[in-house]
Image (cartoon, rainbow, N blue to C red; front, top):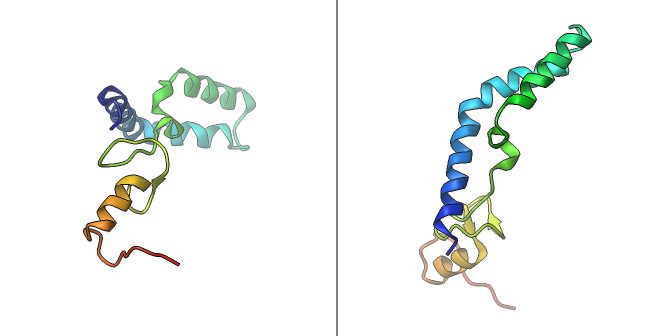
Amino acid sequence: MAKTSSIEKNKRREKLVKRFAAKRARLLALTYDDSISPEDQFAARLKLAEMPRNSAKIRVRNRCALTGRPRSVYRKFALSRIALRELASTGQIPGMVKSSW
């Protein structure tokens, strides 16, 4: 089980990303728009740099929904490999069976 503080910190980051997503997208579009002047592009980059760092999508960590484990998380299930194996062994994931060869 991961520390509660790290899980909560990640949740705060997710909220910030949602709040600033539209503004970040607009500023990024301005920075790559060749039809505007280079001064305006630079100004858009400065405004983007002034935004909170945790509002960037890349700062959000992919974590297990059950345990909060940050590594080896399957995107499809939002579960870590350990939690996925436990649920599959107890038959709680439909269609998933244990494999052996």
